[in-house]
Length: 422
Image (tube, rainbow, N blue to C red; front, side, top):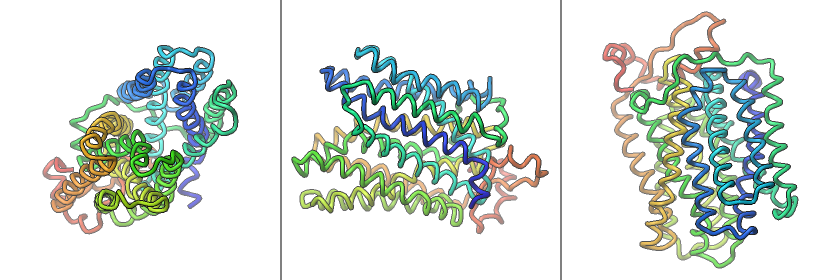
């Protein structure tokens, strides 16, 4: 296990620290905006501004990596993301905050591209799933920890903005001082959605589904619990239970994806999400406090690993110079889903009741599971692993990952057909 994480330990530690600051900032800003009597619509626009910046970052982040490399981009985006919380605290204006959130979204999209493409280059066939699942587990855990840090000081003061800035800044230190080799600069990183779909339609749709469902959850979970109980604390407990369930399931799901094949685990997770959603709708009116939290933990355990496993699956099929493009494209699919999902889910909730959130998430996961059944039935195999000299192994590790053992006999046939079905 030590050998698996040693090449990426500094990167994971740095990511954990800076994402703690991001979690704190994400909770602090809407609370402080309410205290400053920002109009409700302005608060909504400020939240949407983050995803606008995130989308821009997904489209331009790869270009930055091509120009100056992973380490310089990581340090530059960390410095810029560290400055924005301080400006938030100094300039209490909805317009200024909207612009700052665009900047923050841009920075973190680029940081995610750097982190995920870096992890892919250091991953091997046998450990890609467990590495990415550990990364997502860390992301969920530290984000929740950052949210809890809002209890340290009053959100009406300047202290929490300072803490958020400090945490993001400290995240750069492990990466800057790491002795591990940095990834090579890619030559071509333009986001090509057609090529991304050719590489792995299952992973592309998996990331889109994850964005649709998770975006709806993060936006509407308080509305869901409000339809059950007038106690506002239920929302906090429900979301915490969901995060804990998602964090605990990351490692076993990633391990199983390494051993059994990623599409199989994606299918199992999607079916579980659909089943849990149906259960939530059927028992909605009878849910107790314990039932709500068990529901949240179960849904998080099934839904949250989807993104990490999808990313690992896409990189099983990517070429050596495509890992940055793949990371950018999959983040773009996730972000697009996170923007659209809340709108559709809220419309379903308006037409029925609060359980409409799970009607929506159950439907999107059911569609994904149906598509995965179709893909698995075609028995599409991954490209054969190339045997290379040891000194080149790290730079090409992201081009291959675990394939289904029973499908290896079809590799020659698939390669002759141009690997179009992958």
